[in-house]
Image (cartoon, rainbow, N blue to C red; front, side, top):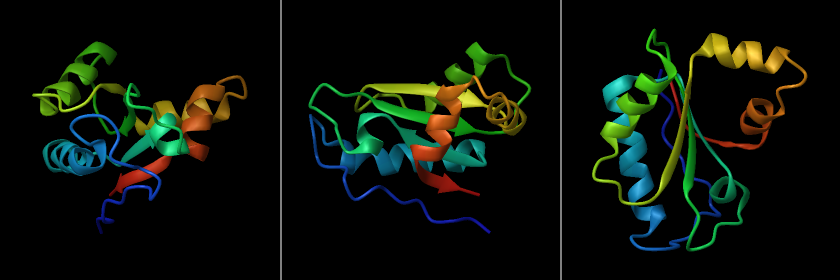
Length: 121
């Protein structure tokens, strides 16, 4: 069963156009086209500290055999034209699982534990 997409309450309409108005459409498009397992918002928007210059940081977890660069391009093309600056990371479920087992991989662990799940299948 698909879980509904949800935005953290602390996302405010910062910058132009407001991320709060355009991010849900971007997430929906990724979900509809690629059927990822999860889309996680991390960084300043997730942690309640965005500024007008902040980009939107997304971790997309999906099954794919594509190389890292091709994954980024696949997700990135769905966000054209870009309504706001976006930093995209695309990982497979297995890569995330391996990163979480690796005690030295703080980056993915921080995203998964502190980030806000926007979409989950």
